[in-house]
Amino acid sequence: MSTLEENKGIALSVSRAILNGKWNELGALLDDGFTYTGDGFHFNKNEYIGFMQDMKAAFAGLDMKFPNIVAEGQYVSIRFVSTAVNTGSFMGAPANKKNLEIHGIFIRKIENGKVMQEWQTTDLLGVMRQIGFGALFGYALFVGLFKVKQKPPVRKA
Image (cartoon, rainbow, N blue to C red; front, side, top):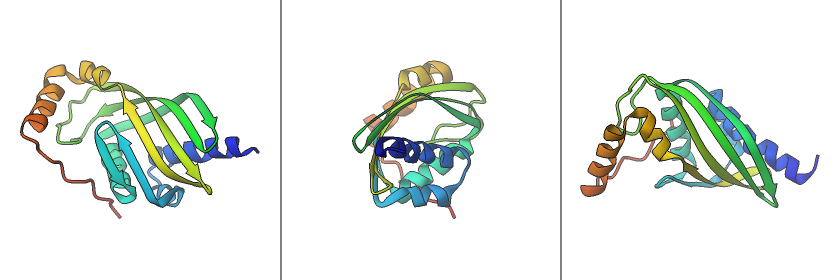
């Protein structure tokens, strides 16, 4: 297997560990100096795992498809399509019991068999259209106007 193929496998293993709730496996795939930047958030390794644990708990039946995977050097870019039902509170927004389809792209940087960095962008307008523009817009406006800082996610045992 080439380095590019190995890197693709490592990058996809992160998503599979999240989908399967294998948090120790996820921790082993991420470098201790791992950083995440996406959709206005910046997380370290444990904050990222905590964020993913919160997401997994808030969305029943979470599934992801990976229609496009491109690797170049130490970078792997993956387009994803997630489907789930929002059954729990997430990022301060209450559950809405709606079926969601969320599209996005992430890029993972691989070094020495570990993920060092992840950058992500999500189709937030598409999400707002599905859950109700008012709820998400109101939340975003409140956070933006009043400079509300969310507490960083906490990794669970």
